[in-house]
Length: 268
Ligand SMILES: *Cc1c(COP(=O)(O)O)cnc(C)c1O
Image (cartoon, rainbow, N blue to C red):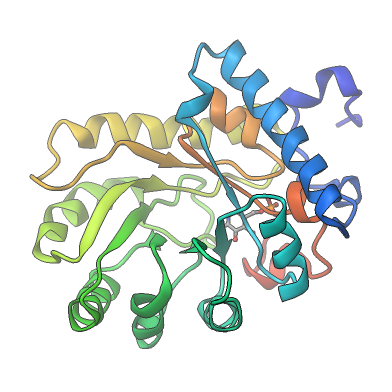
């Protein structure tokens, strides 16, 4: 696969080009990165006939220092996505002084960490088991809180990815009204990590079709309006295929020093 020129960049994936993301070191760096991302989001919306207001940008701050998150906040970020609960909880604890900051947990959860999520998160995007749904609901009831959730679906068929298989999603959704503290918002996926644009696109198309199909039979109280899909390397394709939330780390914060395999065993 040749390195894309700037003019074709928006239709390429960039999973293998982490050096493209310089570190954001000042609030101005963050403003610059956010503006650049928003311009690319707007362009992707324009060419696919979508309203730019219908796509939410979730900055993903995993592995980044508290100082870095504070700069992002200064540049206007009010919502951070984190992959690991312990790390997210620690950041939440030390950043309580920042008004109006919301936390989204976007990585796999073990039931023994549900208690932490119930305490501080406003959104959980990686729901893929009834055991986790049950633990979260119980802890949320105890805290007197509720939580927006996305059901994670494995659209790439890779063993290394979490999430329900597309076939399991329908039965799973039928069980969720039992957990009244969970507000089901939609589906989430991670596409294949590949430079093959059409295979990546296929993952997003699969999630959209699944959502359209499930929406027709969704139980009362389960809304499936949201599609969380797309990250720094593939967000434009995701927007073209209907993403309503894109989860962006490196394009905003700069490259991570840890390889993706640290988060997704066997990725890459
Ligand atoms: C890290 C992460 C992202 C963001 O990846 P970038 O390449 O930094 O944009 C998106 N979704 C999930 C679930 C992640 O863990």
